[in-house]
Length: 227
Image 1 (spheres, rainbow, N blue to C red):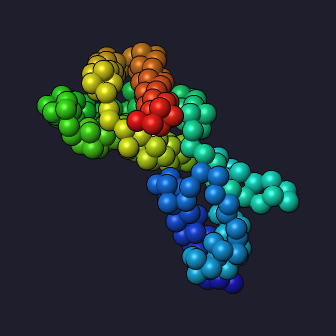
Image 2 (image 1 turned 180 degrees about the vertical axis):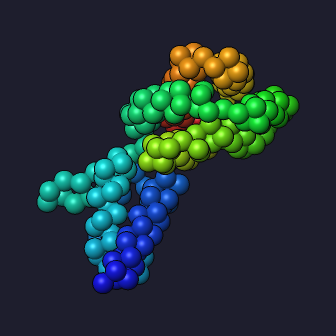
C-alpha cells in the first residue's frame, strides 16, 4: 500500500511540475483551456494526477477553474505580478530578519564578492549573468532558513517573475538600484540592524515588481502601436 501511495504522489508531482513549467515558460498560453483527458493523454498518466495538479496550480494562481466551465490558464499580467510581489513583501522581510542574526563572516564575504561581480558586469549586456548573481545573493540569505515552505514559495515566485521578465532588458536605472540596494542590505547585515534590513528588502522587492510591470505595460503599448 505504501509503495502505491508513494508512486501516486510522485506521479502527481511530476504532472504538476511539468504543467507549471509549461505555463511559466509560455508553452501553454494564457486563456488556453486545460482539459483533463487531453493533459492525461499528453503526459501519459491517468486523470487523477492531472486533477490534483490543476487544483494545486489553482491554489497558486496559475489556473482558473469554474463549475461547468472547466479550467484554463490565467494570464500572467500586471495584476498577477502585483499579487506575487505583495506576497513577497510579506515573506522576504521575515526571512531577512532571521538572517541578520545568523549571517556569518563567511556569508558576508560571499555577499560582498557577489556585489563586486555584479558591479563589474557590462551594463549594456550580461542580463542573464546579472540575474544569476542576484539569485545567488538572495539564496545565500534564505536557503538555511528553518521554514522550508516559505523558502520554497519564495523560490517559486522568483522563478515565475524571472520567466515573465526574461524577454525584457534590465534597465540601467534598475541595475544601479539593485547594486545600491544590495550594498545597503549588506551594510545592515554587518551592523546587525534587522529593522533596516527588513525595510531595504521590502523596498527591493517592490522596486523589482514595479520594473517588471513597467516593462510589461511598455511592451503592450508597443504592440498596440504596431512596433
